[in-house]
Length: 392
Image 1 (cartoon, rainbow, N blue to C red):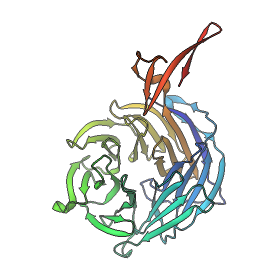
Image 2 (cartoon, rainbow, N blue to C red; image 1 turned 45 degrees about the vertical axis):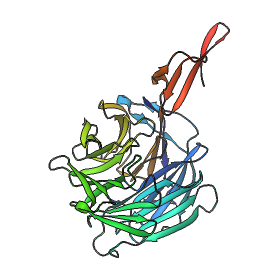
Image 3 (spheres, one colour; image 1 turned 135 degrees about the vertical axis):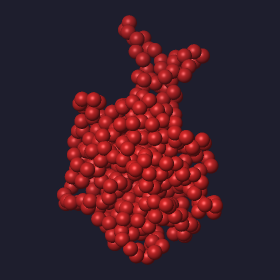
Image 4 (cartoon, helix red, strand yellow; image 1 turned 120 degrees about the vertical axis):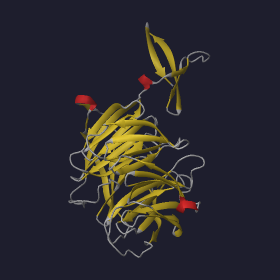
């Protein structure tokens, strides 16, 4: 069972950014990263042609709850704020993505604007000069035509491989650093793109286009690289897709439902109906427990719950429309950026009290619990006639 430890609200200084650009419906202009000491997180967000960085304190753990498990935020301290250099876009940035680089202090920041111009930078989070190196890839059509939403994603196994989706162009371009590998042509306007995860999924892309979920393998040439199409809501639109390390695929859109598919059989495992009051534009599987999923809707609310049981766990609300929605790569630090300039950061962890014992005998130190990927052993200690539980 997941439990929120804290919910913080930080405000972007007006001297840094006073009026964010509106962007598109998809909240893809925010990326969050927990710094090495765990006492702070860095939020990278884009407005107009620039990328900004906000360092937010996460030292204190305080949580207030309202009705129906609604989390109430506390004010967070902004440690520092700055403009990220070497992102010289000439049109509005549509998507910001972070990936783990080589070493603990290296991050890879990817941005793409409304015309498909891609810029990838390596960031050193320890040194004062955070910009190590960067490369820029212009759009294949030289930016001719009308600007629209554009998204990108890094391959989880090959960080040099990146996919760029352009909505009105109905195209997905695959790059290996600044070298173009292949272009995929969709039937409808793509609204979200993710690499599939798993041992044999390095070349598999999941794309939502119109009311369909399409699966592509850019190594194949038959059928243009499309290997599967799954129809979604009739007359509706799918706005978001996300994948889990076990290979599951989840989609959501105008039908206000989350559908989780098993790629081994291309069938729906579960359908969580009514998890959002309005259209779903953001989905993220939990990194701590993959039976939980985070759902972001256009009603200012982010919900966490069990997708298989269709059970709500907790939720929190922003103070205006979401411009960005993101989660740290390997931990459940979930963030949302609002048009008002507020950034909400939720720290979610496994609840030890709800952990299930996997062994209760054969260990001299007592009971043994499996919490996420960690093993917790419980030892009873007697002192002054009282017994205490010690978690090791």
